[in-house]
Length: 121
Image (tube, rainbow, N blue to C red; front, top):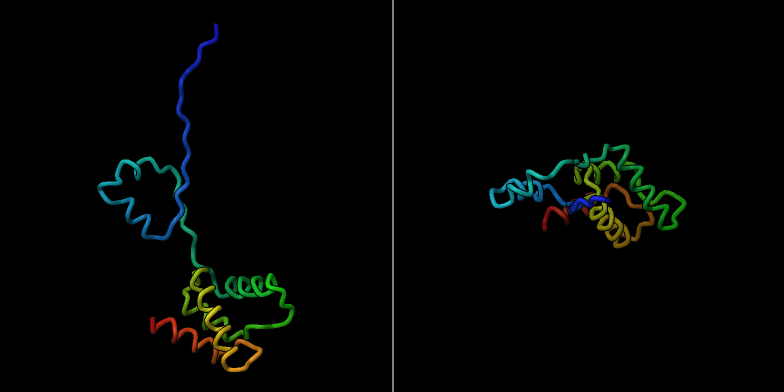
C-alpha cells in the first residue's frame, strides 16, 4: 500500500528596490521576513562596467561607432553611482541634450546638462 504525504510546495521570488528590504523588516511583515531563505543585493557597477553597459546598449540599438564620449560616460557613472536604472535615465537625457545641441556625439557638455536636469527634478 502506497502512503501519500500531503505537502504544500510554494516558492516565491521577491524582487525590488532597497525599500522592499526595509519594508520587510517592519513588524507587520516579520513572519514573511523570517521565511526568506536567500537574499541578494546587486552591487553598483564600476566605472568600467558602466562603460561596457552603455556601449552594449548602444550596440543593441544598432550603432556601431562611438556615441558617448569617455568623459560623458564617467560623468554619467558618477552621477548615477553605478546604478543601472539611473545610468539609463541619465544616458537618455544626455542623448536628448546632445540632439538639442545639434551634436552627433554625447559629450561631457550633454552629460552635464543631463545631470543638471536630473538634479533639478
